[in-house]
Length: 116
Length: 113
Image (tube, rainbow over all chains, first blue to last red):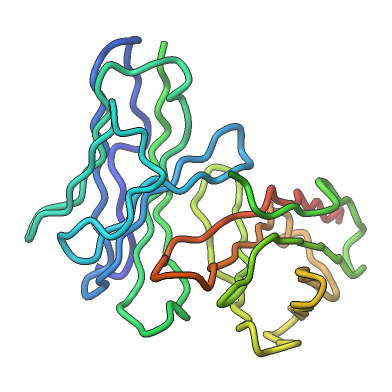
């Protein structure tokens, strides 16, 4: 598609439950990024993929967070044993393959995760 | 950690006035980008300026980049009520093969009709 599609729009989970978020990047884009936005300002980078391979996972809290981008499937971000502090809006973005990274990223509308 | 700082945090102007937002960053960059976020939505890319460029225009937008001061500014001329949104600068660092953006803290712009 021509837009990054994220589902669901809103996800509510009790503390300790699992949460799984999905992202369909723009067709033909090679890079996928996940960001976490807390309190409407700071965006924190979590992980990036180049096609189905993890490109950079330096932002991932590895104990509970995992992500995949498998061929012919939406990418996913999964949080095990959720905590109150995981409440945030999670954005997915994609960009074309380009030398030097001089391409904008295209963002989805995000998934609002609420942990109760 | 948050690399970029933006000021002001909030800006309120009348329709037709110009709005200027500033952004500072800490490390060497490949490029700097500006995005807009309307309430409840994702980021929309506005403009990208490369590290070897000093100024760029796109419609009513003007972006400057000063790599010696590690700062950038976004000017929106002849503002409209529809420009009301949060504006974020985002830098792509130049070390290694990193492709992720490091965002500033954002400026909430309100344009009053």
